[in-house]
Image 1 (cartoon, helix red, strand yellow):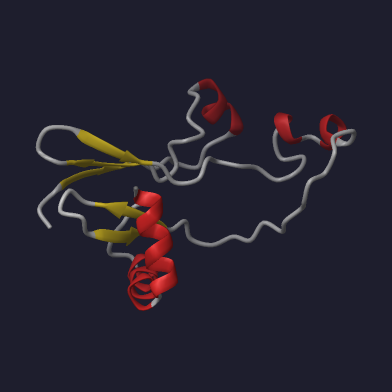
Image 2 (cartoon, one colour; image 1 turned 180 degrees about the horizontal axis):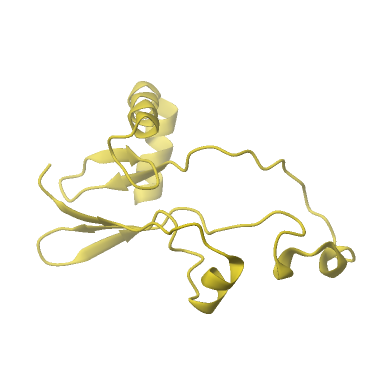
Length: 123
């Protein structure tokens, strides 16, 4: 569409890389320039499995009240970006043109409920 975009990713990183740089929000971070300012779009904060890093050790969490548990499934990070002209495109962590982004865009376009939700979140 001719807009300038900046997409941020990271190499295979350690917990210390995220912690020392306070970079938990950097995964999939996207900026879109509208001609005068940059608008930022966050994806998901980096999260870790139980016992994977010092802040998620069972010994530190065992006395906490469990609100819910959820299985962590690996897959592609997909998010939506709104451009200055109002268009919304799906993207994977680093691309608007990956197979995953194209499939997500198709789902977005074919699902009125998803479009309504995503559009509302963009507001």
